[in-house]
Amino acid sequence: MVTTAKKTTATKKTTTAAAKATAASKVAVETATIAPAAEEKIIDPNMIKKKDIYDHVSVSTGLRKRDVREAVDSLLEYFHKSLSSGKTLQVPPLGKIKPVERGSGENAKVHYKLTLKKTDDSEKKDA
Picture 1 (tube, rainbow, N blue to C red):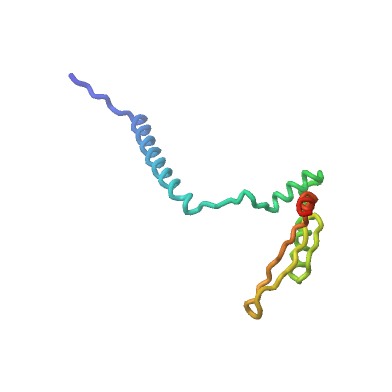
Picture 2: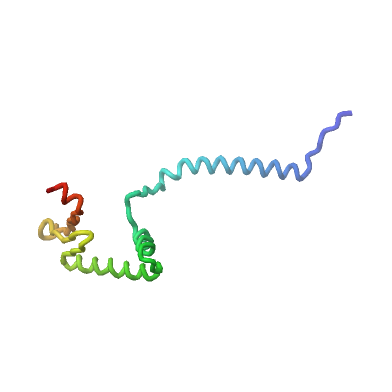
């Protein structure tokens, strides 16, 4: 007499769950290989963001980030307003930023020229 093993309900559920997981992982792998190419963001390692400025100023001065954020935002807003009105900024540790108008009439564009302040080492090399 030959007996066949009957599949229990638990065995069927486990087998079905394993099959669904395998199918889902295949779809996930296929999606993962396609999706990054379409949505990949390029992060420039040389880019400094406002958050980096907040962190640096907070660490170097010992001030709270909330206070630093207000001060930095106010400073950047003032720089923007001044440059928009055509003024030249002269910030000694950084250098000079001045608006330069290119073109005429409707094609006129304003570019901003930054002249970095020379450091002591570069001044010695030039001499």
